[in-house]
Image (cartoon, rainbow, N blue to C red):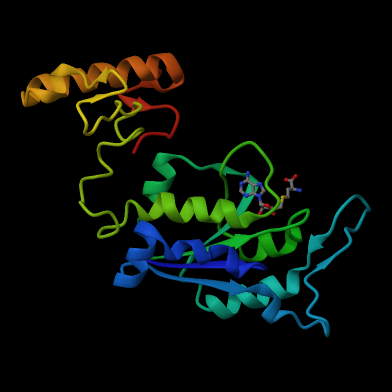
Length: 234
Ligand code: SAH
């Protein structure tokens, strides 16, 4: 998979070189680059923002550098072009899976008050939000999308089945985990997990999953035709 982040702050993506995503980049499963919008500005001071028409607080990112940057990275529109925006479709497990089916993803990160609407209308295929709150920039949101999506790309996680058992994969929150030691600060690992009876273990975990979901996210249990209402099913 090829991902390009279009941003004024490319260094914010340095953390992708760590851990699981870092390994995917090193092994070539993920081809990632953060592209600096400023390098495409035709302004003599490489300015990329200006005051909003109609007045109001803050600055707006100007269309020219973004337009030229996107067209340099993706001249033939081979990428799905996403603008990170609080006004976009809410990210979910289902949306991460859907996005992972794309070969090429471009993520435009806004800053300040956002970007000139004309560049969104001209260049962008879809808008994605990571939740109902406003961040100061799209970079952290893009990082969330990259991590959430890459987990579904073959070869990124150590074992190809490891994302199948997670929270939301079956419409439920995941059961709690335990590891060694068998007793810690006087607290014991549930007996059933130690006896090696896999049928019993599956039953116990399923019950824990259902209990946790009912307590914390009853909205996930409201299903229609066997599919979760929350992420639209997959
Ligand atoms: N004025 C805008 C918010 C701008 S925040 C509004 O009220 O809708 C600056 C940038 O941060 C945005 O352009 C967007 O790229 C990013 N951003 C902020 N909150 C976000 C969220 N919840 N999800 C995705 N991107 C977000």
